[in-house]
Image (cartoon, rainbow, N blue to C red; front, side, top):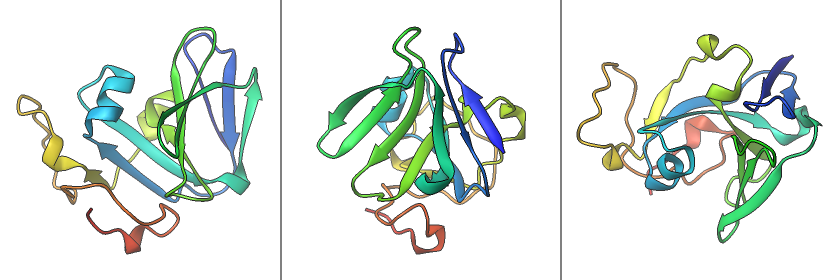
Length: 142
């Protein structure tokens, strides 16, 4: 069982089973949503996931994209999208044990801020991934 929480602890989540994928995202939407130069994500099947405590508030940030956040402290918590059915994206920094996060690749690397230096040899995809995070081997660049 893995768990995560917001800054104030009011909104929490947990899932069981394996993480289906883990990555860094460099897109403008993710950066602006978190006010961060890059965002770490992990994906889990929705069937293995549940919210705990006070459920999150949700905003539709674009058509078919829902971003979840704590209604009390505002911490970003998760992301769902119609184009990734059956999956929950969770912010790696919301993990109770974020030091154990192990990203496997970068997405939207073509949007990386020029002043951000990342010293890794992970695969780097320029665009958005168009297939389900449940099938990371099927990823392609959009």
